[in-house]
Image (cartoon, rainbow, N blue to C red; front, side):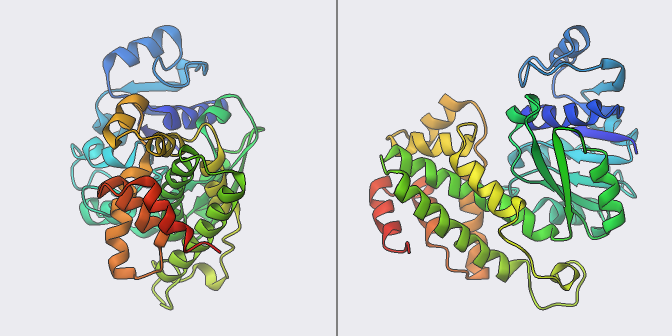
Length: 341
């Protein structure tokens, strides 16, 4: 399996570490030539996870995404959701034909309000059986430090999904597989929104007792949405409940990822929300962080999407109004308090 990785931020760099630790050769798309020069000379990414050193004999580095795709049969997309379309729009429509595509994108594409698989199917004719996801509670910083983490790989075919997962199994990374391609993506999107909310609550000086109630209610709200959108009673292989099995929303890829994103000091979304709670404007918080908090765009996308799904989502709705409609944060959380149980 010849991997190509699209992205050079912290998450992409962490995934590159996993692959190269397993002695996988990788074609790596890096946005600028200066970073490539540094990688070749100093063996580390100068901008992200600079403590991670690479065996450069395993790396084929390119600023042209077309070269990476052309020379790979398994493409891993690991860029923030807001930049997915921009990153691959140079590709020909048939460039991904027959290739396995793995999405490590924990967000919805704000340009078109679509999941990655929906966009790829519409724009590049990527077939559902060739699409896989890589999700779970796995901060890049902890991967860099080789602290034990778990990743869930989702795909429609267990054999193909397991083959991909085995390429990432290391002493510090355990892998799990499931078939819930839609559900794990929506869970990854929603947990970022709830983490912004947890950060806002912290910034407003709510305590741990309230946080636990907020996150418990967020988990329930998320499960309610997923049951409506990812478990329809349909025989269609693309949308039916995977394998006819009940989905365990307490598993690591659902509840685990929600918990770590809401509580961890590594969480960009929690940090972003904390600034909002302390009175920063959205723009000021974005400038100070200089990193992408996926929950910001996700809150608007999910608010719009839920107009059709019609799941009860008072927490998501309120966070959307705080971030996009200038609802004062304390006033918004007074509304949230009324819905918590």
